[in-house]
Amino acid sequence: MTQIHEIAVPDVGDKGALSVAEILVKAGDLVWADDPLVTVESGKAVVDVPAPVDGTITKVTVAVGDSVTVGCVVVVMTASREQRPRRQLPEATDPSVPRHFSLFAAFTAASQANTPPEELSCELLVLGAGPGGYSAAFRAADLGLDTIVVERYPIMGGVCLNVGCIPSKALLHLTIAMEEAIGMAKTGIDFALPHIDIDKLRSHKAKVVGQLTGGLAGMAKARKVRTVFGNGRFRDAHSVEVELAVGAGKGMGARQVIHFKKCIIAAGSHPVHLPFLPRDERIVDSTGALELRFVPQKMLVIGGGIIGLEMATVYSALGALIDVVEMQDSLMPGPDRDLVGIWEKQNRHRFDDIMLKTRTVAVDARDDGLWVRFEGEDAPAEARRYDMILQAAGRKPNGMGIDADKAGISVSAAGFIPVDCRMASNVPHIFAVGDIVGMPLLAHKAVHQAHVAAESAAGLASSYDSSLIPGVAYTHPEIAWVGLSEDLAKQMGVEVDVARFPWAASGRAIANGADYGMTKLLFDRTSGTILGGAIVGPSAGDMIGEITLAISLKCDAAAIGKAIHHPHPTLGETIGMAAHVAHGTCTDLPAMQSRRS
Ligand SMILES: Cc1cc2nc3c(=O)[nH]c(=O)nc-3n(C[C@H](O)[C@H](O)[C@H](O)COP(=O)(O)OP(=O)(O)OC[C@H]3O[C@@H](n4cnc5c(N)ncnc54)[C@H](O)[C@@H]3O)c2cc1C
Image 1 (tube, rainbow, N blue to C red):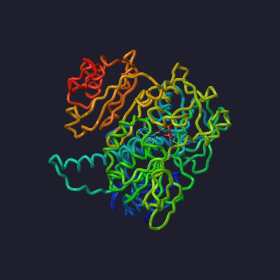
Image 2: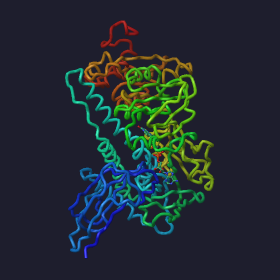
Image 3: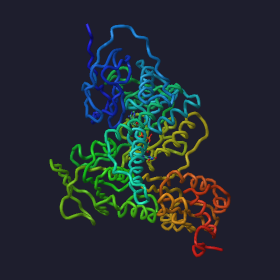
Image 4: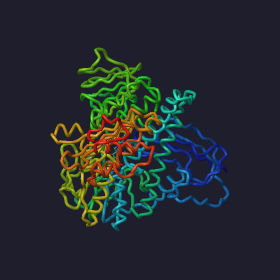
C-alpha cells in the first residue's frame, strides 16, 4: 500500500510568526530522505523542512510568503517502495553548492555530530554564536582549544547574520539600487517604474542569510568545534546547564550539563521594547521590520538612531511615507552634525515629519490603524494614524538572562558584564565579548574582542584597544566616521586643524551623481598627526578603513596625500585631496580654498 506522508513545519524554537521563504520542490519530484523541501523563516532563523523518507512529491500546499505555524502541513508526499541509490550530498563548504543543500547538510551534520551524552566537558565553552561567539570559538579552536559553542536558536550567526547587519544590508542594497535606477531618468536612462515583488525580496534576503549561516555551521564542523543548540545558564563557575532546542538531538526541554575550564560569554543583546506600546502585529522592532511582512502606507519610526534610519530608508524606498520621532535634538547620534546635515538634505523626501525633542506617549491600536499621541517640542496637537510602528529605541544587553551570579560574575544594573583589556570578567577564567560588554554595539567590535578573548583564554598576551572603532550608517548616502570628531574636539578643547574636501570637486563623485558628498580629516595642531576623519557619500563605509589605518599608523597629511595611494578617478581620492587641503595646497580646489601656500 502506498504510504502517504504529510510533512509539517517543525518547532524551530521561535514562537514568533513564521513564513515560507522558499519552495524547493514541486508535485512529481523524486526526493530522498533528508532532502530540503521548503524553507521557513522566522525572525531569528531560516530552517529547511526535510523529507522524512525517499519518495515522490504529491502536493505542495503553501506558496512563498505564506504565514505558517508549527504543525502546519506544507508538503504531501508518497514514500517510494523500491530501494533507490543514495545521492551524494555536496560538501557544505563548497560555495558553488545551492544554499539549501549546504545549509541543510551542514546543519544536520553539526546536529548529528553533537548528539549529546548526559554531560559534556571541554576546555573552552562559548555562550552565544553571534559574531562574538563564533569568532571566539573559531579562533580558540585554531589555537588548539577543545571548544563547545552553546547557542539558544538552532542556527549560528546571532543578531548580525540573522536579524541585523546582513539582512538589513541585503534590503538596503536592493532598495538603494532601485532608487538610483529611478534617479537616472534625468541623465537619459529612463526605466519603467519598478514592480516590487515583496515575496521574492524576502526570499532573496533569506538566501543571503542562509548562505552565511550555513557556511558557519560547516566551518564549525571543519574545526571540530562542537555546537549545542539550547538556552545556556551558569550552574557555577565551571559549568552551564543547557535547555536543549530542536536540532540538538534530544527533543524540546531536555537538559545538558557542560563542564568547562574556561568560558567566553558572547550572549549579545536584544531590542528595547517600550512598555506603553500595546501588543499588536503592526508594531514591530528591527527584527519584525526585517521580516518585511507588508509595506505600510504610513509608518512611524520611534528613535532616530542608525537602525531606525536604515529601516526607514528601506521602507521609504518601497513606498512608505515615514515620520520619525526622536527625544534628542537631532537625528543619528555619533557623526559630526555637518555630515548629518548633508545626509538630511539628501533624505528630506523620505520623511513627512521629523519630530525632534519629542516622545511618543500613547498608542491606541484600532482596526483602522495605530493612533499615536506625542509630547514635546515638535509634537502635533492631535493623535496621528499609522499603519506600522517601528520601535528602534535602542538595545539592551543579555547579561541578566544567564544566571551569571551563580558563577560569581559581576553584571551592571544595565545588564553589561564589565571586563578588563584581556576581556576577562571579575572571574579570571571567564571572559566576555561583544554587545554584552558595552558600547558601541557593533559586529566588528565583537569580532575583535572575540579574538582577544580567545587568545587570552589560550594563554597568549593579547589586549583590546577601544580607541579606534569606525562607525557607519549604511543609509543613502552612507556616513562613516572614526577617531576624534570635530564636535568632540570642540567640546574637549583639543586644538585641531580640520581639512574638508567637498565632493563637488571630485571627478568621480560628479560622474556618479554624488557631488554633495564630503570627506573631512582632523589633524593634531602641534604634531600634525591625523586624529580622526569622516565621510558622507556613497561607499563611505568602504573607505573609512583607510582613515582608520592612517590614524593607527600615526600618519600626517604628507604621508596620506603625497604618495600615489589613490587611483583616478575614485571616491577614495577624496581622502588624499583632504590631506592636500590640510597640507596647504590642493590643486583640485580653487587657490582661495588652500589654507597655506
Ligand atoms: C537591524 C540591525 C542592524 C545592524 N547593523 C549593523 C551593522 O551594519 N554593522 C555592525 O557592526 N553592527 C550592526 N548591528 C549590531 C550587531 O548586529 C551586533 O553588534 C552584533 O550582532 C553583536 O554580536 P554579539 O556576538 O555580541 O551578539 P549577538 O549577535 O546578539 O549574538 C548573541 C548570541 O547569543 C545567543 N544567546 C543569548 N543568550 C543565550 C543563552 N542564554 N544561551 C545560549 N545562547 C544565547 C543569542 O541567541 C545570539 O545568537 C545591527 C543590529 C541590528 C539589530
